[in-house]
Image 1 (tube, one colour):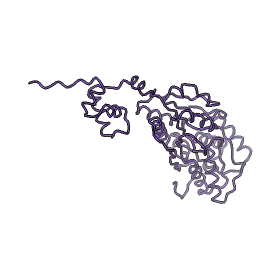
Image 2 (spheres, one colour):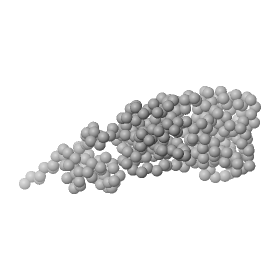
Image 3 (cartoon, one colour):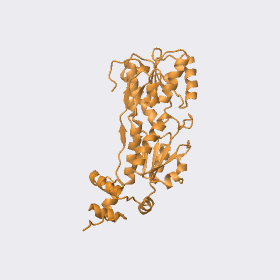
Image 4 (tube, helix red, strand yellow):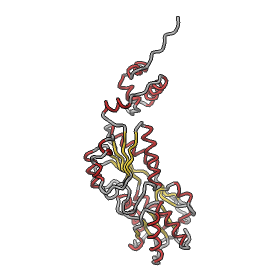
Length: 347
């Protein structure tokens, strides 16, 4: 007798029956729900692919009252004319986009400078997405708190300031500022400038790390060496030229970002000074360009693309109703040629 024809899979129940599991288990497995073991998820997903079965996403989202969209808001520094083209933002966006795609989520991007983020309350960002990721806190911590009270599915890349009502993913900013400054001290530097605004929690924490390292080595901070350098490279160049031409006495610089550090490095050389011979330079972030500057840039590494993935995992955890903790990622010093030679460890 001819063999029995394989059953046609036309519904989720058919797939569940074929796998010998409940309909709920099959649904969770196809949606990659961590409540289901990895082995079972892989089995159900393979069966679905083999039989050409796919979930009706629109019907699923309607049933679950969700949109399968996560909004991403980049908190650009308005006063410094910070742009979305900043390599830090592009790397972060790449990590976020890749992770969302793996979980079958679409991305709604908001990158225009926002004077007051409370204006987003009635926008698509808050009304038509399952969760929101804010990259940066800027000076709008209180507004973020108010938004979090209205939408619990919210994660912020930043610093865990006191009294926050939202989940934070961030780097060890105090540790990063400390390591950068300690490294310069260990190379023999004593007149160490700090370049960048400290008007947001992340940068303020990096400055705290800078002060900590100075204090541990008996160096009094000089207010003249704290320079509010803008993010935008052309404006940064003008501020740095004015400072150097005023004959400020410095032998090194800790910068709050690689973009500012690269502007600093090129401006120093433009004025006929040597890096690190006359002025050593350390950046922050370890963007891809940092390894290709001349000289190559010493910097504090944040694994930016990995950070994007953690942001996604955190917001999806909130969407699933999980208790999601803050996550602080390591900040490691990467020693290259722009800071001279140190005999100490980079840890």
